[in-house]
Image 1 (spheres, rainbow, N blue to C red):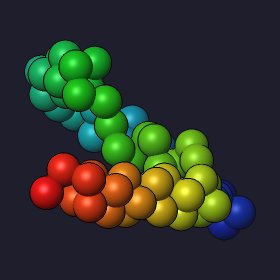
Image 2 (cartoon, rainbow, N blue to C red):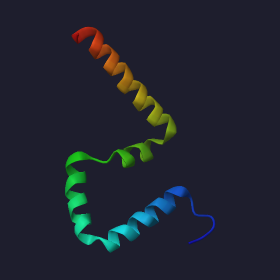
Image 3 (cartoon, one colour):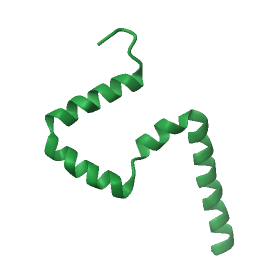
Image 4 (tube, one colour):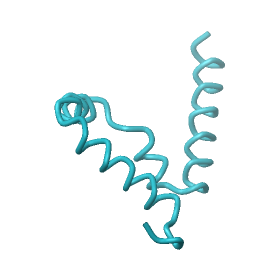
Length: 70
């Protein structure tokens, strides 16, 4: 482990270590992730601006839904 390791690299390294320790859990996780997706991966790939836009879209969608359908 280097001192220049970013938080993303550290999370990925820890995740890889956990997957090596628990291979049967990895099989179960991979089946469930394929069906449901993974919010952490989505948010990590969007960055903070994309995450903020996603949250705003969800809030606006909820407001529009509640105004028109209730």
